[in-house]
Image (cartoon, helix red, strand yellow):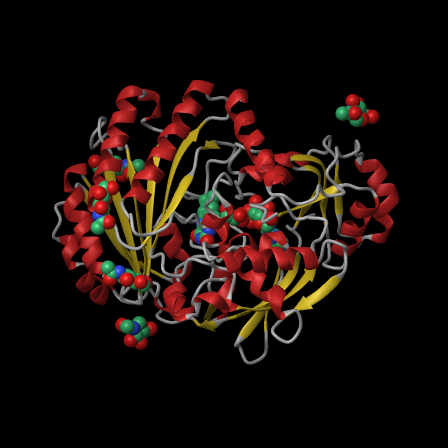
Length: 508
Ligand SMILES: Cc1cc2nc3c(=O)[nH]c(=O)nc-3n(C[C@H](O)[C@H](O)[C@H](O)COP(=O)(O)OP(=O)(O)OC[C@H]3O[C@@H](n4cnc5c(N)ncnc54)[C@H](O)[C@@H]3O)c2cc1C
Ligand SMILES: *[C@@H]1O[C@H](CO)[C@@H](O)[C@H](O)[C@H]1NC(C)=O
Ligand SMILES: *[C@@H]1O[C@H](CO)[C@@H](O)[C@H](O)[C@H]1NC(C)=O
Ligand SMILES: *[C@@H]1O[C@H](CO)[C@@H](O)[C@H](O)[C@H]1NC(C)=O
Ligand SMILES: *[C@@H]1O[C@H](CO)[C@@H](O)[C@H](O)[C@H]1NC(C)=O
Ligand SMILES: *[C@@H]1O[C@H](CO)[C@@H](O)[C@H](O)[C@H]1NC(C)=O
């Protein structure tokens, strides 16, 4: 395990240093921190509900748990601020002591740049308040609010907003990079709905960022936001909650239906013209040994915002494809994630502390030839390495995208509005998996990404920043138009000149 991980990490460091900027002042080993010393020097300035946890504290492990352990940040001490106003004090303390700090919310971030961190983790868990503003057009959220919490709370109050699709992830982790989810066809991404944020900058100052003040930074926060500050709270649009129930329909098809399935999906999506209330569909190639142990099955699930009858009308082409099994139902919106396996207890959210070899791509349509090649390579890899059969996972997502595409591309740092499908490959391995197996997994992961990208020879490769493993060139994460990176570097020099925020797919 060690050899592969250190290979990956040294690549990351090479990229950072190779970026051509001066070495930041803070780029030296962190001192040996003790929670007792921090308690003594800083504790009294912080609110009473703040926790300062050292490595011996029995709450420590739980406070740093990560979904993926390919590149684990080195956390010496955790601070869980009790109030927003604690955060500037913590940042200033870190600056005085030349200690790095890392914002942590729900622990699903996985870019390898996280592995170069050594310092104090600021865990946002206490800052998860939600308050709907009078009039019901927007609400304020704490910087530690997360998707499932937000969806359930707002629904009970009669509202919805844009969140990620998985209940377990934070609002700001996804939101600062774009934020894809079930309401994006109607209202855009999380970032598209942010009105203003309270932000702590690298120097520990607190500012309010909105259209009237710091509009340049607001632009950068919506797509490259992990690079600029700590969001202590944010105001977002909210909307009336819509139909009382959502319809889901989940199919399991044998691999032999691949061509039919992807042709039907292409017709259905019609290159970004997906029916707006057919909010999300996504599927997987994976081994279900009760169907076949030697080739993947195709699992696919659709969610419709409205009644079964309307949904099933649209789903007729899929109902016509002979399935191994299928299941459907109607549930209130907060339960649709549970029905589709993306609830907090669901398969995609769980499995913490696993090694994930992730690669990603953004597609406009499915190239059926490429999909077949990916399927065939799955069969080949598990023949060569039977242990990888249970580990391999190819995930393909198709949102309705009308509102995302309606927003001008240059109006935010999010660069990939005309990608209609987010796709990724992952293996899921135990943290003590053999180095040879991890190496094979990376090989497979890179191969799948290349097959996707070769299948769209007229488009440049894209890697949604929140799905990126961190080894991709900057243009693939922040946009190929040269002005985008120029603008981001300019913002970086202005708002974070010492590059304190450099642990999540850093621009510099
Ligand atoms: C199971 C799973 C499901 C996912 N589902 C979706 C999805 O539906 N839609 C989507 O768009 N993406 C999705 N993603 C990708 C997701 O956007 C990123 O993994 C994201 O980083 C996770 O946020 P987190 O709070 O869980 O993780 P963390 O690791 O806690 O946070 C990730 C990074 O976000 C930054 N950050 C978090 N909170 C703040 C804050 N308040 N202020 C400043 N910076 C902050 C920090 O840089 C931190 O390193 C998913 C990922 C996984 C693993
Ligand atoms: C850090 O300090 C502790 C306690 O003083 C000590 O046991 C440990 O060896 C030190 N670690 C390093 C890397 O200096
Ligand atoms: C989407 O659903 C709403 C009901 O909430 C309906 O009013 C609207 O017409 C639907 N849109 C389309 C394009 O079908
Ligand atoms: C595997 O397939 C069977 C049908 O043969 C189905 O009942 C079961 O739910 C599937 N398991 C998974 C994990 O998809
Ligand atoms: C698909 O849609 C995009 C816009 O989202 C457009 O640029 C592209 O030309 C379309 N492709 C085809 C084949 O129509
Ligand atoms: C589909 O993928 C194949 C294999 O990479 C490629 O040769 C072909 O040009 C692609 N088709 C289109 C329309 O891009």
